[in-house]
Amino acid sequence: MEKQSFREILAGLLEENDPAPKTETAAAYTPEPIPEMPTFHWENTSATFAKPSARYATPPKAKVAATPAPAPTITAAPAAAPVVKEPSWTISELNSTDQRLVNSLVKLGANEVATVISVSLLKKAYRRLAKQLHPDTALAVAGKQKSQEDFLALQSIYEELNASLRAQSTPMKSAA
Image (cartoon, rainbow, N blue to C red; front, side, top):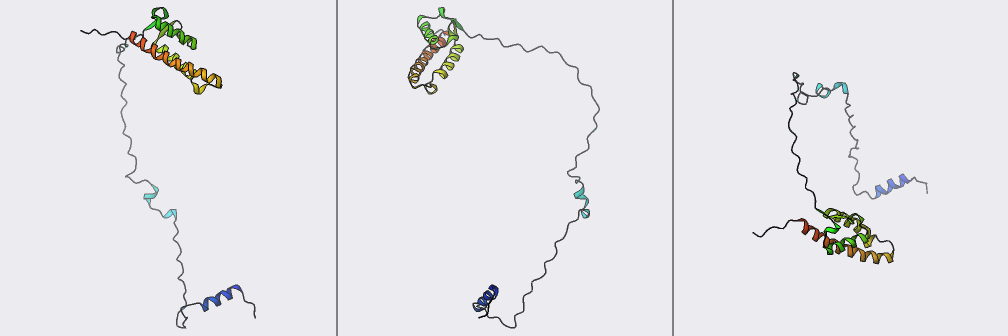
């Protein structure tokens, strides 16, 4: 047997399995030549590509005669809003229950309310101590139980003292 190349073997198999028999009258297929792609030359472009059309052109700037600036006018300054001072109390002005609550706050670490207390100072001290004593921020396990107790005490002290100070700071309305 003679040695055949892979192409020859494949061509023989294709001829054997070809369902359409080849006839002598079938013309051989010759593909049409591919036309050349047109080339684009920049020098052949029209003026509309080279310059912006009048539709998109910027309008010429109008010449405006220089006008002198108006003379400044002197006006009176607006009246300042009256400053409302927040009420504050010394510790001796508070009743005995409030004094006891303030002393408990000072023991927990709120030294800013040791001599004078107001609603805003109480709020500032409470927020600072709440961050410090919160059980989730306690590092040691033994300290966590103590900080939880201190945190609950701080909350109850703040609620009672805040309610009392707000009641003292709002004037009583007469029932006329």
